Amino acid sequence: MTLPTLTPTTTVSEVAFFAYMSHPLTNPSGQHILKFDVSKLNVGNAYHLHTGVFNPPTSGIYVMALECEDKRIAVVHANKCDDVYVRIKTDTHSGDVWSDTYGRSTFAGWKIY
Image 1: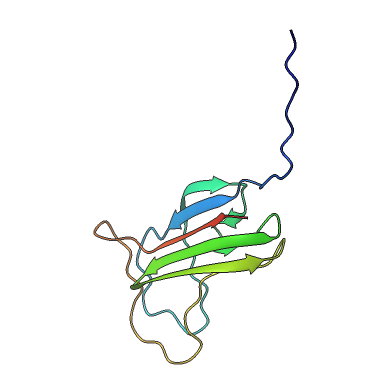
Image 2 (image 1 turned 90 degrees about the vertical axis):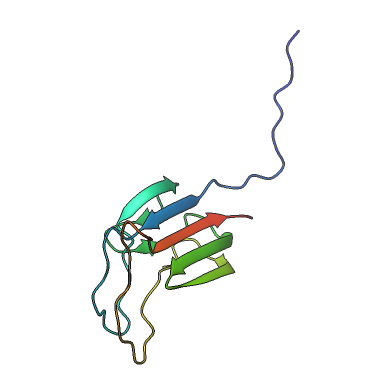
């Protein structure tokens, strides 16, 4: 007896990434894009280590999480090929962005719908 093949009515593309900075960033200037240069997960290959930019392969609802000096999380609608990244605040900034063996600055994202 042959069982029928079931086809789901909806599919969600698998997209998820998690990356961290391998070293601290000394006194970055305003609007500097942070590059999280070590990838621990990159399902869908949409996070680019050399630029620090996530380009969603499909439009949808994404969770974006950042741990860098303080904790922040956002749920956003992103369109296919948008540029999603973390950068230093555009106005005054002073100090370093820490990332070392005692604590890593991280950037992560995943599609939920």
